[in-house]
Image (cartoon, rainbow, N blue to C red; front, side, top):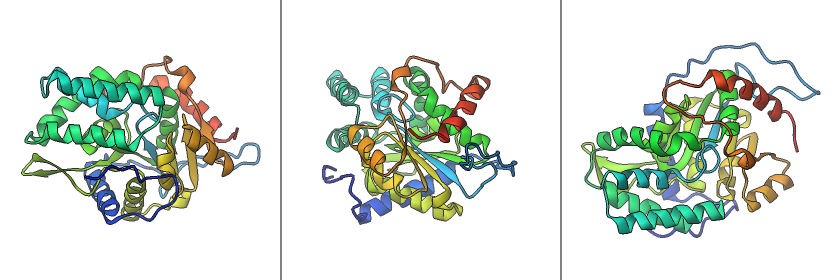
Length: 313
């Protein structure tokens, strides 16, 4: 597969493979989504003349969160690779490759399409021939080992604010949809849009459906899901750290730059998008722990997040 170096923050038309990847991600997300349980809630009062957001009871609104460095510190696929190495899925030289990619990601703080493509190609070769159910089971263990304590508390509180308002919340990521779905479920979110790896009779073939869910493909996935679920994108919100996600952020009426890279920060300020940066508090609370634990501890953070939504920098 060709490298994704052609992706830029400019609004390029989606390729056929981007559309295919987006539609496949939307279909997979709908199949694995938790019941919304949305109910009509009383609207929150206006504050400082600005309408409340998220709007309680607005079931045609939803929130879309990028995963890597927005919801979670680092890249999910690298953490997944570490877990697979521990279980002897591949050799030490491949672990060194994963470790180098993770180190680069941490130092740069942004996604590089070429590095992310290289990591995904490695992952596809590793899982080829394995059963989907096997990788899902292992993914649960890897989440507890490497991912649970890397969730940004501030972003988690923002997601909870949407849930508390009766809205659906989706992860949107280039990570494998199975991994993304596990993370979404552990965080109590609705579901996840992720890269769909082809499987036949429950066994991975080592190929993708379309292309990785990156850049324009993410926007196509959100567009397809919104159409299928009857969402009004103008009333939806999207959150990301990367300029690569400008196509997705531009789709919605409420775009947010979270822990933004330099290009996204500049773009967000030019368009008066809201910004949040939680990187100075990365050692704060541990969230994203298994199965509904710790929800009460998030209540205070949720209230603060609602207030933050109403204030621009």
